[in-house]
Image 1 (spheres, rainbow, N blue to C red):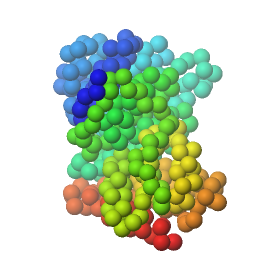
Image 2: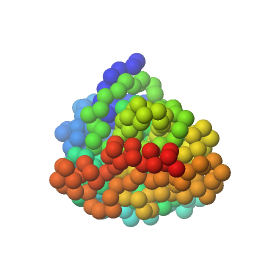
Image 3: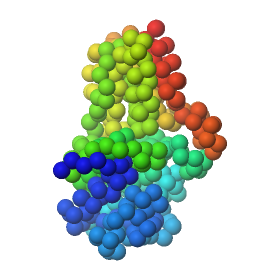
Image 4: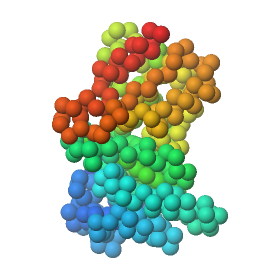
Length: 325
């Protein structure tokens, strides 16, 4: 059944549907139980599934991820919530050196079906230590899958795929998207590693995720009035990344602009630009461009935070420059 819901509610619905379908699925984290989560993204789960399967934990990210790993090794399918993605720094060793490597180091004898949910991104006024887009921190750690849903439909469908996966998956839920609305089908499961063509165009390919996807679409509408047709592509997952979808788009447009809500160095956007330039240079009629956030901590002041990440105007300017090359 198709129903309209919010990005925030889609999280709870995906969790509920997976928990109903599989008794091995459980949720652990800080305040995920009776209070329904600090962002109310787990509302109703405690009442429906009880304290054994929706478990509040101490304020210890190391314990949360470590317990999830142990539960997975013993045959369960845990979902661990890290309240803010920034706090992944506290349990980085558990994620990078334990969660990501355990299946490999056992020669595949142990599965690690752990989903780690992290509230991510800027735009909500939480300051430098609670607003970082943290997805790029994990790009250089083989063994992890990284999911970045931008819409209600993708939030629901990708989270269900993540929970069903036998490998550790990090799901970054963007705080500024919690109130956005959309329609979802309760049976929807979106496969990991498959990009979405959000808007078709002939002149330039813009690749963007989450909040930047929304701004890229807005920029495309502005540019359409000037005769520039932008194709907007949302990879939806950073690992695995759907390079083939980018190549197919470039075969039509021959120009690439990548937009990300993060500093440029060591990022998924910089990596994509490098891969395209190295492996698909003949497709390009102009140098690929990366529109990124400023290389500073996220500002607290609302006017500064708004300018820190790429704005619609910056995306428009980058596309115009690329098309005019």
